[in-house]
Length: 63
Image (tube, rainbow, N blue to C red; front, side, top):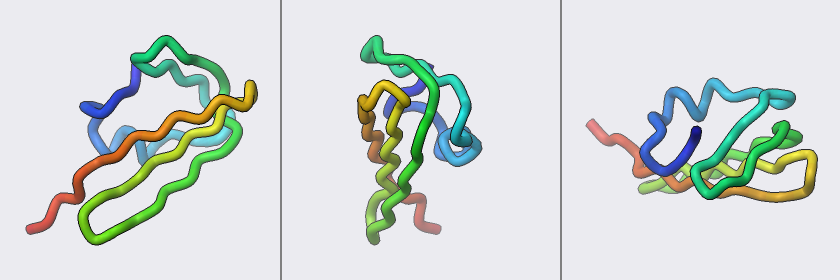
């Protein structure tokens, strides 16, 4: 089950065609994955084959 607390490395390992279940009760097959980067965040936007879209925003780790 994926949510805001899922490690970034796990989110990066997801591929189109994978089955995913999110903590808001939405689940399905990933049709598209968009990753948008800003200075502070990584925005993961997952589109399911049902047309539903899930966004997970992760704080960037700066060392």
